[in-house]
Image (cartoon, rainbow, N blue to C red; front, side):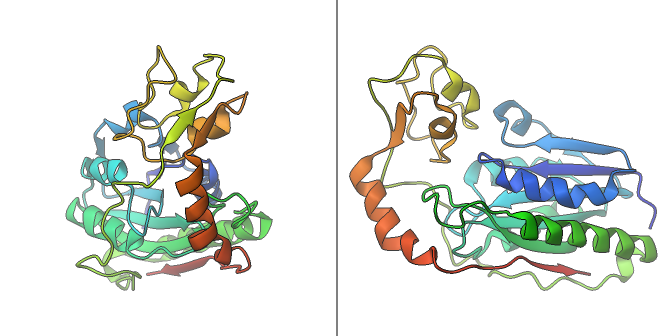
Length: 264
């Protein structure tokens, strides 16, 4: 099939999903490529219209086995016309559960046709030594291989002749959207009011006039404010956060899960 334009979309508060999507998209670097950073609050409010000969490559991290709620709401404003889409889910070495299935269900209803899907492990948001440093060089090499194979398959194929993908996950979904958390973001006395946290927050949950003023209902605990803070003034509520780390996440640190992909 003839491709006219590539759209490279990602929600990536920790920049790890972005790395995977950028590597896959690099296989199409001689096409016009438009990057859509869904981590940006204002970008996420837009409407995205794509045509039959465009290709959407989209990556989303699993939040408790589902798409983060603000991203699923944004995907409702994507519109295709039998537009091929590559679905990519990333996760912190636990499981994707229904993430890819949810992406497929939403985007198929919006006029997209899945032609490939994959999953990649990224360093966990809540425990840095869980999948530390991933995606690593080996992961990114597989992402580039995935992109090259997608390009070759689309070059040879008519989209309507491609086989339907066997997407992991269940519908109706087995997991509920992650809307509540046992811990919050706190600000200590080392805050210098630089406002970098407010600028980094993908939910605009931090006041642009007072970094201590946080809308905890809007916050998705992505850790962007913690990572960007130059004085380590931001942290998650200690006791419930440590309980989550020790009881759920630390047993995952000794397991290395590998990337997976399929092409129609």
